[in-house]
Image (cartoon, rainbow, N blue to C red; front, side, top):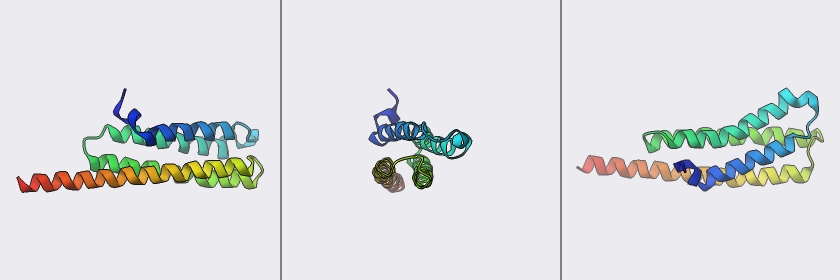
Amino acid sequence: MFKFEKLAVWQKSIEYADQVYLETKSFPREEQFGLTSQNRRAAVSISSNIAEGSSRNSDIEFSRFIEIAYGSLMETVSPAQIAQRQDFIREGSCVQLYKSAEEIARMLSGLRNSLRRQSREKETLNTEH
């Protein structure tokens, strides 16, 4: 098992991508290269950036990838709102996606803060010696 697979936020982001794929299946065919593609790519990017960041050599670098994952998460919120306004998805589905996005956002922020704190602690230890 890779290190990132143990992270609850990575697991949640995979579930979120599943939700996005499920909801976008019913989008009109003419949206295949519009909202469907954009939303799916952004949703996949969340877990991908967490995974890639976990392979970096420093907590600061990992933290940067968490920020990118957060941006990808935010990128999924607008298409969901537009899809609901266009009657591509039900309001309840949009609300569920939004709640999931909020939860992942909190988890990503917590992880980013933890990585930054660890980096500062390591830096402090290195300057003391």
